[in-house]
Length: 466
Image (cartoon, rainbow, N blue to C red; front, side):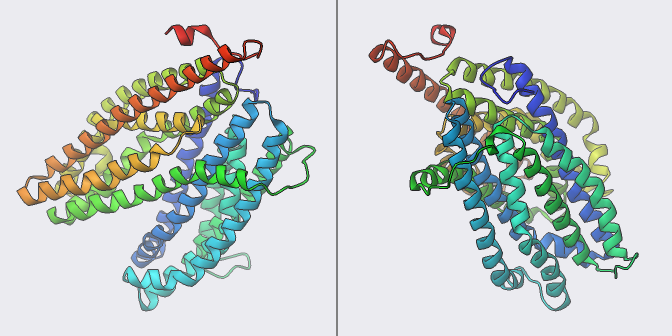
């Protein structure tokens, strides 16, 4: 497909970007399932070791993933403005930043990991096994960061197929390497949990090489200018990348808060929540693809000041999201118990899990509205609200609401219903806020046209008449 998302069918662009991205993230999810499966082949402690390191692992993903979204927005806007030289200079700064942050993550992580693991309760062999895995991941952080940022640059061109290819191949390669490194053979000694870490880093390294080779063939890396440090680029990069980074970190905190409050109902409820949320995440995978597509399309069209196409992108994405919601509701209500039964045969776990899935089914579209409009705000370079929205729905309201429920000694169903209220109120607010931002952009462009009547600005009158 064309890398110019300011022309052609919005529907075609969204499908061609979102579908490969969704497929890729599905295999990414299965990649993690594979690691958990093979850890279980070693021992229960091995699974616990992987689970224990998730907090550190998620910090790497949050920083790399959040900042890379900022990179997509910046590069996409520069491409839309036809400022190719500026885009290339931004790329040089981003690559410099990516290398720097990878080194910082590795250095801080290696020294702090033993203390963090002990705080979480690891000691003796348990601690040694957990560190044997996370140390390998930390030393390979440069490849994780490289993959995220290289993919972000490809996303700005509307290319999600390369990342999909990497994730699909990486999934199957991970099965082979996990088995080989854990069991040993062909000159390799059995490595246990360390083998899972080595398999992951090797695949990330190969993925970075592949994605960079694809990126190198695009015009973005042709005839690169001399690097000239510009603090304004770094400032803008942090401005765009910090909100989604904080949002991802607060998501982890939000899950901890929910787990804390529902833990009083018993271990079966905690287990039910852990299982149900993974089922929910699978059904939300298409929304991740839509999120990537909306960010790429809107970034370029915002740079080109084609606000009619920005509006069309959001409307079409929300229609697609609604259709996926209806499908998800039917599937969760009909097959919810069977899906929960794949992970547990305990009737109490399944009953508690169904309570959460009912809530998930009713609020899935709200999540999609939040994701789509977050991408809209990032694409028009107005991401600051994301921090406040995350604090609202992940921290402040859940703590206040669940503390009240706990004080009143209310049943579990109220907690699930509370989650529905929180996400729908967030969705309604962000849709309203994002619409207002678009109206302001329209007004500013009208002012620009009236003050500079001879300046050529491409836009569709239908947007202003709507």
